[in-house]
Image 1 (cartoon, rainbow, N blue to C red):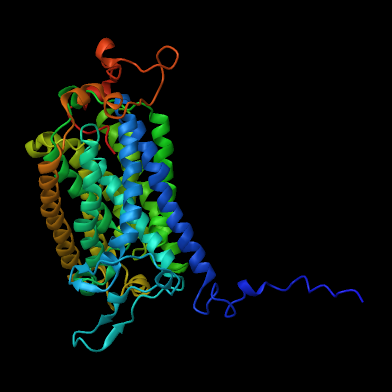
Image 2 (tube, rainbow, N blue to C red):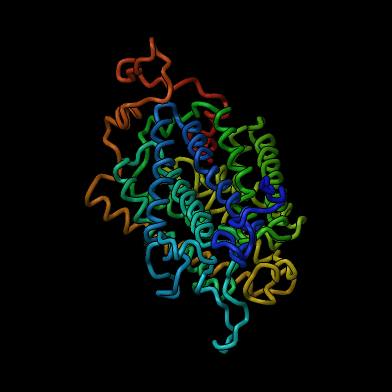
Length: 493
């Protein structure tokens, strides 16, 4: 008698909910899929997004070094994050601003339902629960990886301030130290259940944790490392503007995961966040370009990228808690205020002139991040806040919640203060062991002296170009705009 084949529409047991450890009852496949996609999008912002952008926007002789600083930081953060830093950011509370260190490597931990244990929010009596602990419907492994790519891009943004002169060996030490003693503090305080989280400071997706901290840390590190060579500061043309746009495009599109993934679920709030993100970025890009045309008489592609980034940064702390019209307002502000600090204030303030912030991360991330946090305190809409925030009845000053602006300013002040102090200590200690700055020979030659590699084989049959014999081939004739802004940061991102 012939065997009867099984019905063609039977789902294998391993994939049936409630019948397999691979599909537990609490798992929501849609949420898990979106979280993994969001994490991948954020990862693509760094590798290859910022790797391409950094390698293209700098002088040709620094293309390899700049791209490699980004790539190295990403790899180093992944390992450190899984071994000890994740739990310092999202684990059990050790201090009001710090979690207990520990590995996130064992299967028992990684396959259980995600939960951030310190995020249970109580009323003022300290006993009655106001909002339950954050516990998304996917495994801890998804949460660990999603938060990991956020930590990684923060370190890469810090690198933007010191491209073209920081000793690579010093950078290798800086990455794990800054991740451990600076990033984890901001992450736990604002996201993991720390004192700013409990107080109700709004940082939807990292305006403070990522952008304000990286901008301040980058600026502080630039102070300790010292400036680029005089020749590089005077003339630093990008080696490939078109390729830079490819990196910028990955950054923009990847922001859908950056802001859309932070509700920890695929819900209406994540949709609002993605739409607002693109509205603000587009508005900011246009405003920055208009200002360039009005004051410099030429629309700058690099300026447009700067405007795009400041828009993305500004909307990040409030992406899912503001309305669409508010996203336009934030875009106008982010396209004009950082433009003003970069183009006007920078050239007139001696401190900003002395500290060589290679890609202007202070303006595009610190200024724009703090601006976004304060505007969120003004424009956060009550109904949208109730969809996301643990503190009930949160609202911006525009809706009667004036205290929220105070909270945002205090939160920003804490992030700024901690990063200045922690980053300075880290740089000082590293400087006792290895020089923070490259040697004069390396500063003169660039990638070939530091790595024995160059970005482009343009001379002869692929042999390396000897800049000591021919002069610095990057010193090409600058455009009128470059000459006008050679002492500023108009070519920064």
